[in-house]
Length: 221
Length: 413
Image (tube, rainbow over all chains, first blue to last red; front, side):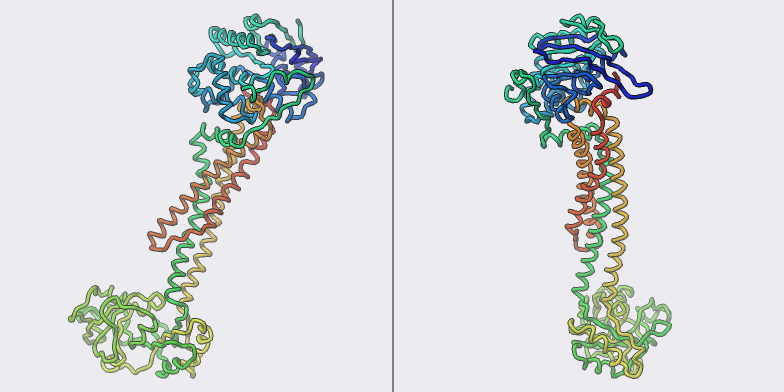
């Protein structure tokens, strides 16, 4: 089953001159896959991630995410799609620093409008999945970089979304911690999570089943 | 978990229904106060701006009302039905005589309940003893009257007894006179040197708010004044107590009745008017301070708006994250509006408490009853909330207008 399908997707940022950062990308991600999108910085991979995750709409072409045509959805529908069907892991983690690890993970379910107790129970389970149950009640500020990224991953998968995107998930970590994050992502994938990892690292790409190479906004392999 | 989280089979089929993103109402408060909990000092300082505005408004209203109720209580107690008739003052402030017939004539006006004639004896002075140099009077006067005075003024004695018709060289001292001469208790030998004669002090009066001139007078009987001080029997100031419902009618008749020959010279006045005027003055001063409080509140609200704008700028990444997690624009706006509402509500609450506290302390210090109008408390809090909405509206709109990608792009990456 295809979770994500891009057809000739383009994104042009208006300006003088206009910048075309994604120039006709077509790709498909099947459920249960773990694929890498690799490219140097400036190759348009962050823009592509925003388009794939439903954070932005393409200038032309079509993005089908979880069966929905992103370019046809209203802001409200898109927000609903993100709340229920999409998880994103960022390079900078973006944890809420006043909150504990478990509260941060539970915030991944905040906009589903489900009761706090159920959010918390799911968060505890997700933290266990990333091996961080023992740090549950620590504040985000008290966690190491690797631990923070694991919290961020738990937050992305806590709602069991149809697809999880990771934007340079190891970019801010040393190689040992990066390796831990990679193996956690592989485990999650083995448990059935569909993963799309955007990276410039060979090592990360090698850990995926498939790698799409991006250069200057076009897929080269 | 299965009931809560998305079932796998929903994803099958080409166009499944999209579930809506929603934020529970009781999640809004913790979400909206997150920024405040992270930056407590800033939150306290910006709430303080609102608190000062509200506190000054509540305190102004409370203090005004407390002092007003004190004055109104005084008015109630003293009554507004006391009138005085004076035949004008000369340039030195000494009272000029009225005709000797004035008091009996005034008693005949219908609606008059009591009349008390008094006369200031300008030739006589009162001293503690005969050793005090002549002229060091301390502004104290000698006044002759009769037993009707106490009843007409509804006054009371602090010490001793009042004048009776039979008294010869006996005096009753006004409150200020006794204080100034240092007479705190009475015995048979307590005397003062009055008009060149020794007068035994028979009593000391409590203060008269509506007749302060009595406080500054040593009172002697008409008989004593005639015998020892060559008093001719004409009154110079007459107190008239009227039926409370006929005060104005009686007041109109006083001048002509007291001195038919020279009625234009006679001044008939209502001493309680001074208290009424005091209330009016306090009310208008209160309005002025209320305006100043409103300005303080405005400054406080601008402070909150300022802090909120900065907060939105600083928290772009958080806004981007929340949009990624499924927040709608409305959710973001609601979060920031909640933050500013909580700030202003805390400020309003603090302001009401501080303002009430100031009122209580001031009222107790002045010995007034504590009267804080409920409208000031409710209104103060309400105004704080409204200013919070206005202060938060613009920053909330700005936060909501931010697109997820713009919000995410600004930090790193």
